[in-house]
Image (cartoon, rainbow, N blue to C red; front, top):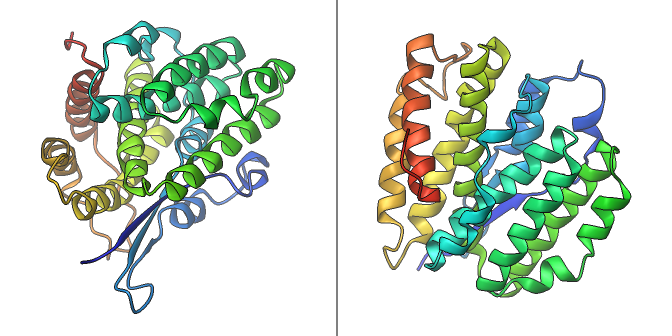
Length: 278
């Protein structure tokens, strides 16, 4: 049986994301989406996916401004009863927290942290949040985006280690799926409010990450618990039909493709959080 390892990469070198905007964004995308296969003789496949914070930072640098009423309602946390829904929405709320941190919304970051704590209790992951004193650290660093970013990265690393140590590595890809969908939703909604070519470029680059995400879930889903989620993500993948990993030309979604992608991302996101599409 093939062993699958999924890593959600934390911001190990955060300074590279927080320095002047003159850095090469293409190099960053390539660095965080690298897929490693055939690692050793055990036929192990490892997928390296970026953390929600990394995607949020890349989107923020492209113009992901803050719109307060588009994040997932915190009150819905009590409605997620199945483990799969809890994992997906842990990712959704993680993305919302990263979005708030990136836009200096410290109190909302703390609010989403408290929401994550409620979900972590249902998922038996309470120790991760309680042992780090994150609420106190967030409050102590109000207005300091760099410090808030380090705190979020620290949380991601602790989560990765916890999942590995408890034989729950596959859970990381499900959590990331929720975070990825939510970040794409946030990006598309901000772009709808004011079209932004740089943001469209970031949305387009997600074709690479989506490919790896689908493969990671497919190979880890031995019990076929995530057949519906895989189908939903493959439906989103259709919007990147023109994408060719072998091409040297820059791949950018056109206006109609962005609109169509936004519609389906919104539908999937609302399905995950249990909200009727408007």
